[in-house]
Image (cartoon, rainbow, N blue to C red; front, side):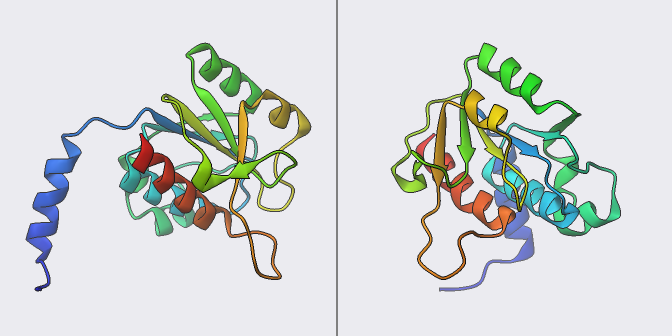
Length: 171
């Protein structure tokens, strides 16, 4: 085996950039950390997410903290800010999106058993408090990442990466 050069990586990426984005959107609702938002942009770009909806108190570009972790991905992934998350969910449901909450709740299924139906929208809530009961009630399904340690959750950006790659690999 040999390491590939930077030019070879860029060539590979240009070829992939011609491929259409996945029928996969993401809603970030009340995410406090701009570093997490930037990291999610970066992963969303890598996965091929079509759009990120930034809602509630979630920060949005341009912002130095977000850009620091996004590394320019915020310029490659389509995004839109809306204060009201419920209006975005309703709009996507009207477009036949399956709305899926990434949250540990009663009745959620393990993420690796989830079979998404395109188009799909993954919803992520606040790092501490999750999502409101109204958001919970408006979603079609909830998935979770099972935890085995003493901590009961992962960083929101890390959790997004796990779920996003699972969804990408099935779509």
